[in-house]
View 1 (cartoon, rainbow, N blue to C red):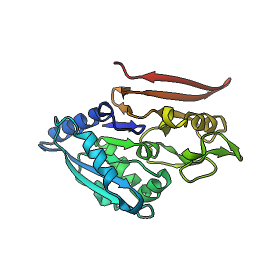
View 2: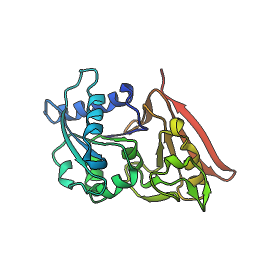
View 3: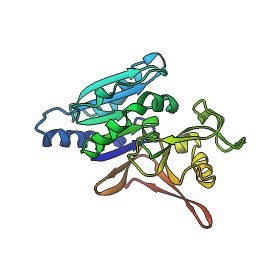
Length: 239
């Protein structure tokens, strides 16, 4: 299985590895067209974001997918049954706390599916909740600003909750574009998380049996706590 974490943005190169893996998984089962469940949580259950995700997955026309789209409103919950009998899972972006509320009762089902070989793509919010310790948002710690207020996800203090548990480090997204790296650094320094990765837009961090790799246009930022403080480094996809 592969866990594909995209930091937002719709660059095709970030989506292509997941689409190829979904096709390979389906082929191994003898299924001609991969069955991909796409879940989005949007105001008024707006379907347009799901359409953008599907378009990014099939942009070059090289891969045919059978997409099963579920879109719910910001206060709704998702039926765990939408994850049954599928070859791949896509969780979209938007308000991260709403995704957590909508999908929390599905976490066990998603985790079991991925452990059984089903690839997972988390886009923005879907990437953040994939972590064992999921950052939901917030822009202050102890009342002190540590990130732009517009990145707060309708939260004041940084909020960390148990996520799906597909990766063992916390995740933040839109890093270069929104300035959220400072939130991840501050959360690590404060001990709210043990460290994590920040992912730029149109960039994917892939965790699979081969280890970690990066594809797309931007960088993945690594944040770790050490005896001398927080250490930050970055990696880019090979061009």
